[in-house]
Image (tube, rainbow, N blue to C red; front, side):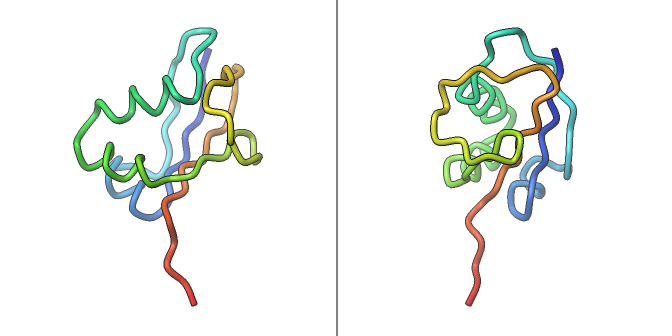
Length: 82
């Protein structure tokens, strides 16, 4: 099973990529994914802690939902604006 993760702004810098395709096991939740990504490096973990996530272009308020094969996960850090 594979998913695509798109990183934006500070998340992209911390991950070292704008996008990645990642193999996950069936039943992997968004929370599982966040934990696995956080283990990559301390900076990415710090950024992910402040991010919001979209799964298939829908706000992911429940991080315990299993991800489906082919899911698109967007990692959105807080944006400054005015």
